[in-house]
Image (cartoon, rainbow, N blue to C red; front, top):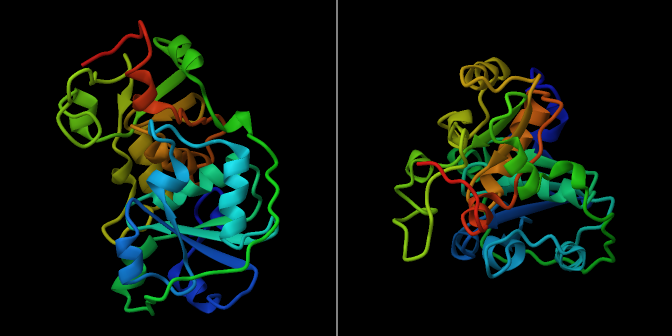
Length: 277
């Protein structure tokens, strides 16, 4: 992993196995349902539900500082705790890295390969729920430099120095799907005009680990997504694009990347915005 621009943001499964009982480490598993966690999770991992802990009812990212402080506190996390993030869905850990950085948490790492690699290696799994004493956590407030808002996205359409990067599936990008299904009445599909399409999952190996620096560089270069440009990734609700922010900024060292966390969930509902199919 030393080939990446900042390899310190990743830990491998062996490192985590060696630190399972470290009191200054908190492991977070993130998923849309608690059932997989209840069946088997990495020992000591705390569960975060994407829909109830991280998103609002309208599927916007919950960026309320008080709600974030309560989530961290009930997870037994202090401002000095090192958080190790993973999920069953590819890239979830890197999205959580972005979220914690938005709120100014210093010590956060992504488990390279996530649950998939941990389980495939036959490492220990637990079924008992992990609980820790509540802490007194204080957020540093939102770091606006890690986000881009819809007005700036609109102003970026057609500008060669900026890349609007759609990291959803091809079905979403083409307008066939709204999120993961055919659109319902009133749901608009398609993509932001001029957006480059590169599905986020193409950055991963079959075992769920990140592709090498050179493979990632060649992948993005092939689409004209180069470090000299400002890159605004987006997806459906900001998770996959937060993952892409992590890959570009920390693994490849791109200097100017901001996550459009409003993503298609917001863009498709804005009045009088352009949509391309």
